[in-house]
Image (cartoon, one colour):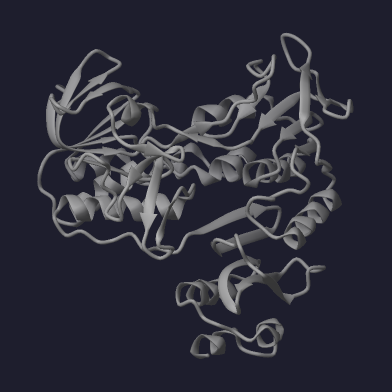
Length: 412
């Protein structure tokens, strides 16, 4: 398109998985008005999960990350403007000012602004061999330094850190993971599952420090070592930081849209405190009907589902958000699939052996399955999703007994 529009019926700010889903879902749901998709990266919407896995390891090409080719957006008559960010939002005038100096007026606005990596607040954290994992540009920069024999120190033992560790081992790097909390994956899983993953990583050659934070980064202009809070010095050629995400709420906040708990507040139809503005994805603090409360979730399924909810609301066929959250993580040959939220569980039931590399763990509260982690058990995961969604009360002994067909518990 030679002349960018100055106004559109729907403007979507953010071309990640949520923003891309809103754009295509609008067309799928019969919306015929003008749609502009704005992204500050120079790429069509792409999948982020492979960044720390197959894209970093070199098994996936750049093109394979793209959810749809640019030509598909053109066919859908979605105007894409990539590589330009939004400077400000004037709600009274329904106008966005972009960093390239242009303005764009909207009928309905969608904020799918995502988040950015939480930075290490230490001197040296901006040195060229300190990396974060969020964008294609981050990984392209990291790949240049990611060579066999290099000493890789990863700060953070969450999904991103452990996935990067497994790729590091695969590519022949010397890998150390440092986690300030007493165990890896502490925020998302039971101590037994954390212990399993710690054993797996150590057995593959990862050096692991838990319960100790980073005191300082040594070396200039490149970091040559990481000093831990207990004065241990870990030599480093490359540092990857994976210590969480900060939702991008500044645009909404400056415009006076309600922000709470670190996210843009939306109702069950993904509408913000301004009836003409919606929000979706990692940036939202959303109302979830299934849990009967507001929450923040960082996951691809959540971003996609909320994208569809936004589109439904804009076309006048609102659907309440009631999805059960699910997540996944690939490390080595292990596929971890998780459903539900395990906080508040009072019993953990393991089906299979924690000493093997294939088992499922079910989190129960008052006998009801509230969450499950399946490791290399995709069929059991599909049943686990139903157990959680239907709030099935189970007999723990039957759940643990592998001679009992898991599906039979759905009728319990």
